[in-house]
Image (cartoon, rainbow, N blue to C red; front, side):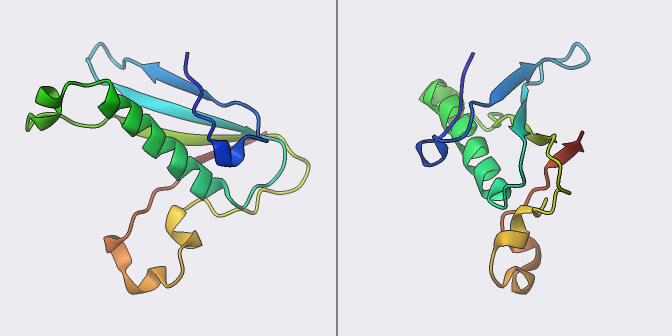
Length: 119
C-alpha cells in the first residue's frame, strides 16, 4: 500500500513494493519491482534510492528502543526490473559499475545486483 517513487523520478510511473512472509517464518523482506518499457541507464541509482527509502520508512516506524537492540535488522530488499521494451536491456545490473574507479576499492564499496526479467 506504499509507493516509493522519489521526487527525482516523478516523471516515472509508480512502482509496486511487496512485503511477504516466507516458509512460515517471521522473516520480513521486500521485493521491489520496477516496471520498464525502455532501457534506463539510471536504474542502479534509482533502485538504490528506493532501497534506502524502504529502510528509512522502516526506521521511522520502529521504536528507538527496538532499533538499539542488537537483534534489530533492516529487512532484505530484492530489487527486480520487469522489462518489456523492444531494444535489448543494456543498462548495468550491478550498482558498482556506475561508480568511477570502483575497481580500486573492491568489496569496500556499496554494491548490489538486481534481477532482470526481460519479457
